[in-house]
Amino acid sequence: MTSKSVSSSPSEMGGFGSAAPNRSKASKAKRKPGKANHRREQCPLGRDPEIEAIKARQSLGLPLTGRLKANQVKQAHKLLAVQHHPDKGGDPEMMTRFNNARDVLLEPVMESIASE
Image 1 (tube, rainbow, N blue to C red):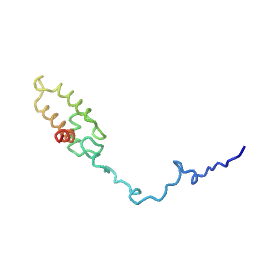
Image 2 (cartoon, rainbow, N blue to C red; image 1 turned 90 degrees about the vertical axis):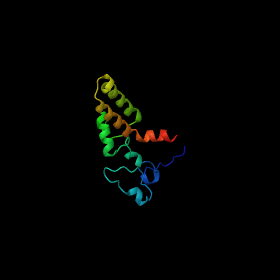
Image 3 (cartoon, one colour; image 1 turned 180 degrees about the vertical axis):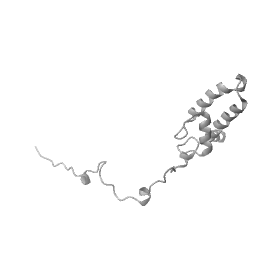
Image 4 (cartoon, rainbow, N blue to C red; image 1 turned 90 degrees about the horizontal axis):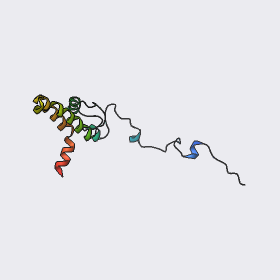
């Protein structure tokens, strides 16, 4: 039998805990707090929405921050529309508010459908 020496020093192993090679300054830069690096995070369904999208989320009873999916918005709008529809005795102003909130949140989705 031959015995092989097993190296256990981190610099020789190159695993997860190994020291990283020289990195550029851009990768060492820290993000500004409260700012998303990518534009998609600032869209109405993204993690850091604008104030109009936050108001729209609030009127539909959705979480104010965090990512949303289009289906979540559609489902929340549908539930509120069934309860507050003017044909069912609801307030027309409330229904208009819900419709506008849905349009604000689904704006990018609607634009992509219109461009097809």
